[in-house]
Length: 460
Ligand SMILES: Cc1cc2nc3c(=O)[nH]c(=O)nc-3n(C[C@H](O)[C@H](O)[C@H](O)COP(=O)(O)O)c2cc1C
Image (cartoon, rainbow, N blue to C red; front, side, top):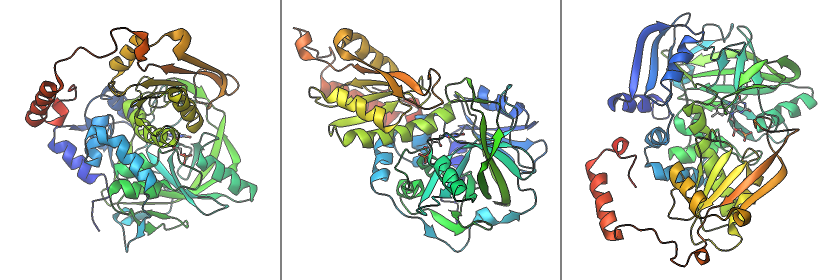
C-alpha cells in the first residue's frame, strides 16, 4: 500500500510551496465552508481542520488553475493538453491490488451520516457532494465509465443525483431502468488528480476514463473490489460511497448552480441509495466549490481541450493546441491554434468542435503566433485579423446542452471567428514588430532559469 495514487503527495507539495492554507477555526457545513472556498477561489488550496458535525477534515481549491493542474501532474503548463491528449490515445487498464487504504474503515449503516458535505449557495435547497467521481458499468455492454455528477443529500442513505441527460452515466441509469434494475455505482472522493481530470473527458460511450487516468499517471490505477457492489475502485482514494441509482424514481431538485455562475431549474434527478462508505482512517473529504468558481472551471476545461484536440486533429492535422477559456467557464468558448493554416481549415475546425462537444458555442481560430490561452492576445487577433463580413460564421439553431444559459428549446446560435492572418489583406504583411528571435529566446531562457514557475506565468 502506498500514497502514490492519492491526493496526499500533491497536498504535501502544495504545503511545501506555501500554496496551502490551513483553516484552523471550526467551520459550519452550512454556507461557511463554501464562503471560505469562494473567497479563496483564485488563491491557495484550503484544508479545514475542523468542520462542525463531522470527524473528517475537508480539502478544497486544489486544482483551481492551469499551474496547479500542471503541478499535480508534475509537468509544465504547456504540456497539460498534449499529455491528456496522449492519454486518450494510449489508455492503460487498471490493475487489481491486494488491499487499499480506502477500505481501512467500512460503514454500512447510514453511509452519508457524519460526512462534512457543505451547503454551498443561498438558493440551493440541500448540501451537495460535488467532488465525487462516479464509476459505473454499462448495463448492456459491461464497459466502464467515470464522470463527476452532483449528489444532493436527502438523508443518511439517500441522495438525488443530477446528471445531464446526454452524459453516459444518465444513459447507463436509463438502460438499467429499462431492464427493470438499478445501476451500481461507486462515488470516489479524493482520488489522485489524474483520475479527477480523466473523469471530465468526453470520450465515446464505453471508453473507460479510468484507463486514461492510468495513462496520465504513468502506471495503471490500482483498484480493489468494492464491498457491496460489483465494481473495482481506486485503492488509494480518500473515501468511496457505494450504492445504486434508480432512474425510475424521480426526485425534484429545485434551483441548482451551474458552471456559468447562475442558477438552473432542471426539474427532477434520479434517486441514489447508498449501501456503504469505505474510507481511510484519517480520510480527507474533498469539496469542489461549484458554479463559476475556478476549480470547477479548470477541472472541466483542460480535459475538454484535450478531447477537442483529439477530435479536431482527426480532420485538421496541423492543429497545434486548443484552449477552453475561463470566460466560457471552461465549457462553452474555445480557441483553436492552427499552424500554417490552409483555406477552409478554420471552418472545418469550427464544425469539428461544435460536433465533438455540444456545449461549445464559440470557436476562435488563431495562428501559431497567438497563445490560445492568453485572452488578450486572442482578442487582439479577433480585433486585428478579421474582416467580420467574411470571417465570422454564425450557425443558427444548433443543438446544445440544457446547461447553456442562452438555449431555447435545446438550440442556440453558435459562432466561429476566423482570427487567422490572411496575408493578402495587408500590403505590409502581418509580421509582428519584435526584437530578433535569438535575443527573445535568450531573454526567455534567462527568466526560465532564474525564476520558479509560479513567478513567471507572465512569460511570453
Ligand atoms: C467538479 C465537477 C462537477 C460536475 N458536476 C456535474 C453534474 O452535477 N452533473 C453532470 O451531468 N455533469 C457534471 N460535471 C461534468 C461531467 O462530469 C463531465 O461532463 C463528464 O465528462 C461527463 O462524462 P461522460 O462523458 O462520461 O458522460 C461536473 C464536472 C466537474 C469538473
